[in-house]
Length: 89
Image (tube, rainbow, N blue to C red):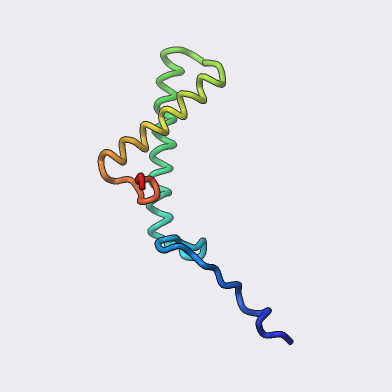
């Protein structure tokens, strides 16, 4: 039996790059909380839009959702609580 076939392949990674197997519980929890906050923020924004303007066309609602998500990311960056992956390089 060829022993080299039993070893996992060697992956060359850039400095600071994380492998998918390197994801820690804290890394996941940090992002999960931000995405949950973004979800509820979009839900609140869309509820307000629907209450004021009624149902809009799909493309307009999509634009409102995108604007709310981008506004959330900009806000958490400004506050300094954004995950590292959301910080500009």
